[in-house]
Amino acid sequence: MMQQLKKMQQEMARVQDELANTTVEGTAAAGSVTISMNGDFRVTRLVIKPEVVDADDVETLEDLIVVAFNDAMAKAKAINEQKMGKLTGGLRIPGLM
Image 1: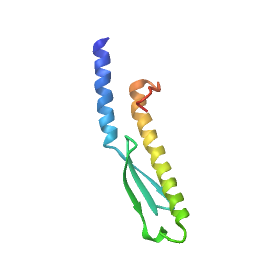
Image 2 (image 1 turned 180 degrees about the horizontal axis):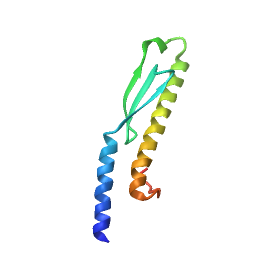
Image 3 (image 1 turned 135 degrees about the horizontal axis):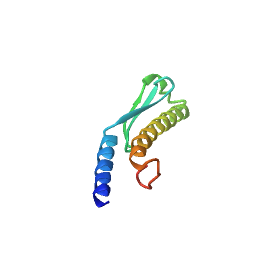
Image 4 (image 1 turned 90 degrees about the vertical axis):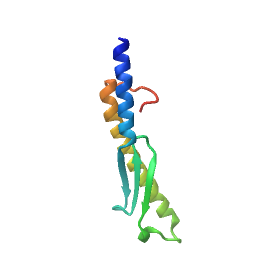
């Protein structure tokens, strides 16, 4: 049983490394704002097209960033749950997902 536990821990570490190197993109307004995020839920890049920058309408840009962030977060969460779910048999283990 200890060998099985050790093997599972090693596999989880491998999957966590894989997730850290997996990138997803969230977008808003047909790609006007794009956020790249890894499987560790860390934002790695933010791209804002110049045409959506309007000093008189900062609120719209803020909304687009929120939409792109939430899109990226949902995609990262889905990948995380898919990969970790294979290891945990669908159990939700705190701190892993």
